[in-house]
Image (cartoon, rainbow, N blue to C red; front, side):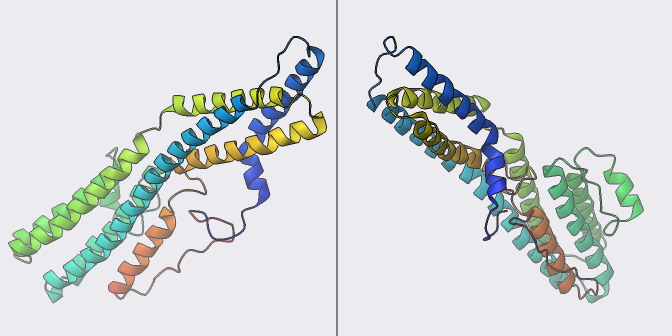
Length: 297
């Protein structure tokens, strides 16, 4: 997630440097052709590139809106996970007898492991990695047999709750309430996985780039009477604005891709761990994550 700090120019330029090279080459080629074949190539009314530019703006606006919706939905999903995580611990402490502190800690730590596992899985990493401090060796061995590691952890917790009910430590009403919280976790997990696996149409980006290059060609022809030392920088500046907006949309449409524009899942999982451990009065409470760069993951 980008922070409210100055974004380095190098980061911005790196995102569009290839496209700007193409624009520079196109500008030189079109300038040469319009100069060498001045009597063959007809004049291009400025209204044509203006119309194309307006159409591209509408298409970009649509893509930005759709991409932001995906990014914002991802943030809402993880916001609900934070709220439900706090609720889970409070429910366990409220519904279970005082002699079940060990059971509460086990379930709570297992839930912390679920958050980190979901985080890593969404980013294409090993969902069972780094969970040694939250799960037992037997539990780690069990979840490693599953493709969906976070689903396996959720199953362990639901089975644990069922065993507590069978032992008479939870009544039916309490069991239903806690089970509803686990249903919320399952729903959030499914929605996040849907965003991860549903790819924005690749052809949309392809045709958008094609339209931008077509716009630049027609604009360059329309500016045939302007000197190259002014025309080509103008093309670079205009194209940079279009390509930066397109890149922004492309990054936001994938909020779990380990990019600076990602949903800050590491920071959110860290917050959940802090909240849960403080509710349990644990001593080894981690510090909130900070960042020395312009973003936090």
